[in-house]
Amino acid sequence: MRRNQRNRNNGKKERIVMLASSAFVLAALTMTGVYMQAQNTGEEDDGYTIDFTALEDHAADKNQEIARNRTDTGNAVLEDDLDYMPMEAGSGLIQIPGLTDKEETQIPEGEDLLKEKEEEKEKDTEKDGEKNQEAEKEGSKEAPGGDAPREAPKQAESQAVKELQFSEAEGLLRPLEGEVLLPFSMDSSIYFSTLDQYKYNPALMLQAEEGTQIVACADGKVEHLFEDAEIGLGFTVELGNGYELTYGQLKELTVEQGSYIQEGDVIGVVGAPTKYFSVEGANLYLKLTADGIPVNPESLFR
Image (cartoon, one colour):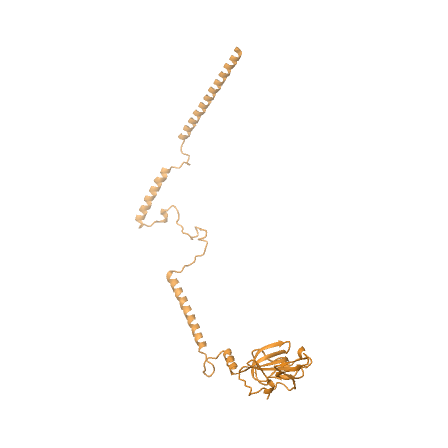
């Protein structure tokens, strides 16, 4: 028991000694630091310490010197009064990206802009005047002989259509020399050999050899061209006063739709017969109508 108590007392003493030693070391270090700081404070200026009060005094002296120079030189600031050389943008000493690296562009003043606009307006006015003069000259052109301006071809064409006149008293020119193959018959039916039947015939068929030339029976205008299964290739001519003449069983036409033909003009040749007239043979199909009513063309041949 006594031994255990002694051991405990010895442990307490050791801890007390360690704590005292640590406190002594810390105190020594603290004293050393204080001493070193005092030594540094007492050293002389090494040249790297900035004295701001001295700068303020120097600036005040410089301002007074500049003020005196202005009074002597008429308030002009001299380059010697400045601690730097004055520079301007674009002088070559200062480079400003996007500003000094570009060429100088001269912007016209307000008066120059007004002059340019006025000149452009005058040019436009002159051009408009020239165009109007040209238009007046073209509009004032007249046909030869001092007549009124020429009429359009369409107007002349319409006049030609109005001039078409036909009457049964004038008669028709026989289109070719040939016998009547199938006569005009609207009062009674006639026999068609190829069809092997009787029926009315609103047209006249003139017998002719294939290739025989055909001439126009009268003056007129070609209304339309066609190709029919029964009467073959053909066309219809307007004669005037409601009369129309149809030619069929043709080939090698010399007319065009909308063209004008005169009596006696060659309009084509006789073609091969269609299957509807294969037995009858080659022929010219000729049909005359007055306001849509069939008329016997043979009765009008001169």
